[in-house]
Length: 190
Image (cartoon, rainbow, N blue to C red; front, side, top):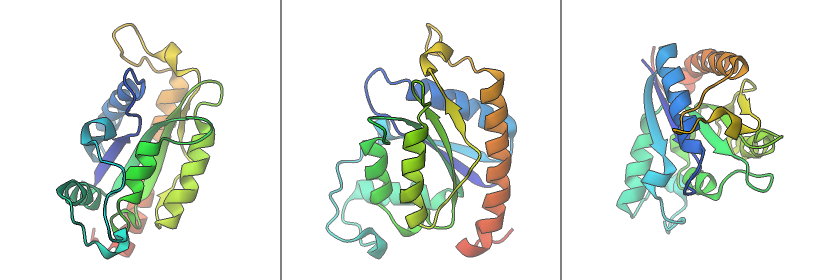
């Protein structure tokens, strides 16, 4: 089975990204089309870009970069679970993306965005410009969660509505199709 890496982009203490990420992880596991790995940027703790060489050269000098490279290289598809900060996506996500180059290429990415009234959609649109530069394929199918706090209970568990469930399934179905279509460009055989 292909490997789906779910990247939790918020690192802020008290973040809602962790419960949203856990909910999506459970949904993706139940979907059953992928092996699942979660990459929580708060746990990975990449320092602000500290590599002296351009990432396309893959001449990494730090172990944290080599570890991140191996994780991203192993994944066949991604889902970014991301909030919107000031109409944009988080600095830790941008930093994690910028650490690497070739490892991202020809892999699809789905977006689970959340926030207030805009549901993180402005951040989702911004990240698409970045990932396409790395030859990733962002999906039109997405999960957008407006007023996200209403879906998180007192124990920090997301209680999704029908729209969230349906959009998650549609996005995962499309990730399956696009990941399979991109395998040849990555040199991966069926």
